[in-house]
Length: 456
Image 1 (tube, rainbow, N blue to C red):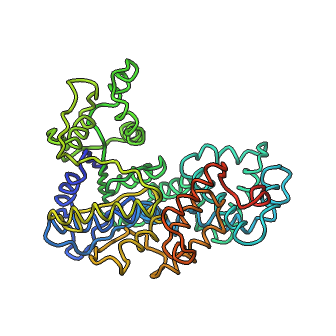
Image 2: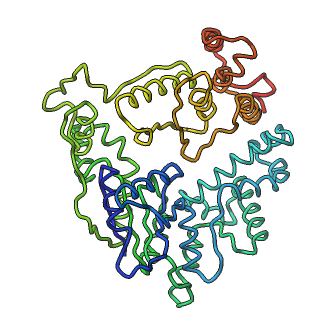
Image 3: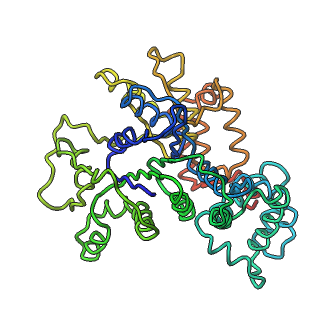
C-alpha cells in the first residue's frame, strides 16, 4: 500500500517517521530502510530519529536511485539495475570515433576539434548526462529513436551506446527504467519474483521524482508498505491556486516555488490509490518575525498584497541579504554569522548552510573554517561533498585540473584567483582581485582562453 505523508515542515515529517519507523511483526534485528534524495539528508535523518527515539541504529539510508534499483532486483528474476550517467559516459567515450565521423555537422565539428584527453572526456560526460536525463525524464523521446526512419545523430549514437552497454553487461544493465519495470512486473505477475526483502520502505522528502521512479514505487506498493514523505509548500489545492492565478489573485511566490511539487502531487493523485494515515500535517506559524510571516503566507497561499504590510522590527534578523564579491567572501560572511549564532547559544549541529553547488565552495570552506589563522575552531560537515585536499596547495592543484576541462568562464577564473594559495603566491590582495574582475567585465570577456579554445 502507498502511504502518503505531506507537510510544509520537515520536523513534522520527522515526527511521523519516528512513529512509523517500527511496525508490528518487525524482526528485532531487521534493518530500517529510508531512501533519501541526497547525501546531505543522511546525517540529518539519523540525528532526527536519534533525538526522537533516543537511539538511531541499524538504519539503511540509500539514495533514491539505489533504492529503486533494489526494488527492481527484488521484483525480477534476474539481477537488474538501471544504467546511469556514468555508464552512458563510458559508452559514449568508447564510441567517440563514431561521433567524429558522423555526417551531422554539430557532433563531427565538436569531437573533431576536441583532442584526446580531458576535453574529449568532458564532451562525453555532457552527452552521458544528456542521455541519462532523456532516459529518466523523457522516455517518449528515447522511444521515438527506436523507429527506423529516425536518423538524427543522437538516435544513431544512442543505438550504438545501448548496444555496447547491453553486450558488456549480458543484459543485466537495463537501459530504460520502463523496460526494467515491465520485466519486474511481469515476473511478479507470473509468481517468479523474489520474496519482498523490504516489508516497508520509506522515501523521505524527495525534492523531485521522475515518473518512472514513482511508477516503480507504485508497483512495489502492491507487495509491501511504501511510505512517501513529501515536503510541500502549501496545503491548498493546486487547482484552486491555478484558478486564482488566472484571475491574477494568486501569490506569485507560491506558484513559482510549487511548480515541481505540483507536478509530483498531480501524478501521485492520478496514478494509483493511496492513503494518508497521519492526516493533515500542515501548520502555519504565527507571524512573529518576517521569516514566519513569509512561511505563513506560503503555507496558506495568501496574497502578499492583502491585509496590510508586515511591521518589520529593527531587531528582526530572520531574513538577511548579503552582497559579496566572490565565493571566498561569501564563506567569510557565513563564518561571522555562524560565530554570532554560536555566541547566542546555538549548537553547531543546529546550523545548516545551503548552496546551489556545495562542491564548488569546498576549497573556500576549508580555507576559511580550517585555517590555522582563525582562533576559534568550528566543526564542519560538508554533507557528502568533501573538500578535495587537506591543504591549500592541493586545492589549487584540483582547481587547475577542473579548469583544464572547463570552458574557463570568467567567474571560474575569478574564483581561482580568490584561492588563498594563489593570492599568496602572486601577492594579490582582495582589492587586486576585484581590479582584475573589473578588467574582465569592462573587456566583456565571458569564457575561453583564446580564439582556438573558444572554437573548440
